[in-house]
Amino acid sequence: MSRIAERFAALKREGRGGLVTYLQAYDPDPACSVAILHGLPGAGADVIELGVPFTDPMADGPSIQKAGQRALKAGATLAGVLAMVRDFREGEGETPVVLMGYLNPILSYGVERFCCDAAASGVDGLIIVDLPPEEADEVAPHARDAGLNLIRLIAPTTDDARLPRVLAATTGFVYYVSITGITGTRSASAEHLAEAVPRIRRHTDLPLAIGFGIRTPQQAAEAARLADAVVVGSALVDTLAAGLDEKGCARPETRRQVLDQVRALAEAVHSARRQDG
View (tube, rainbow, N blue to C red):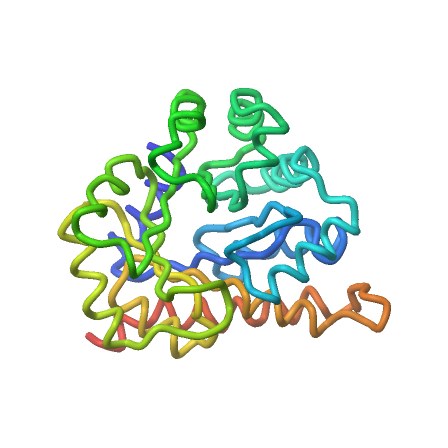
């Protein structure tokens, strides 16, 4: 059983929702990024999504775009991100790590080589934003052979006719993009989520994570009552950015501020269903 499957099985046994945290690798610099990465499991992150910096992040809003620019300025490369995961795995063998990014860096690296190196580094899954199911054959066989989950994005505009096709090629968990548009710009209503989640569940038994637009512990708790996990990204990236000095460098308290926010989100997500009971 993969780390992702084991984590969601454990969450189900414990009767609680999961917290998936997103941060951009190398933001604002390798040392700070690694320090935060090592602190995430202890702060309550159940799954870690690590953004791979890219020059043209079409699905990302202003906050994550700026994070990517900071990361690229700090020297981020795909090989460097894999090295960061290897460093993380030296002390942490249980928390799943999912790389989220775009296809071009993987093509430049070499798809088969990348999948092998990612798995060897301790990566558990991939979210490739601009890889539709119709073109997935370029990556999916190599990911499968390497034991990597290929996680799909489901949008509000994905209709019932297309859902089975997208979900048939999905492994690990399903990522429901709760809004149309880019990350970090607005939030879905509880009414929308209450309609969307059952519709998706009719087509898959995989765990379902809700992301895009979830910023506060209250919003995270509401989503956790409906889905198996909640993804928070832009809110954490914003906290990190607010903790930088005038030169864009991390302050001594930057790591603590981000991890404190993760703790507050984790407490809300993990206790949401207990409060209902």
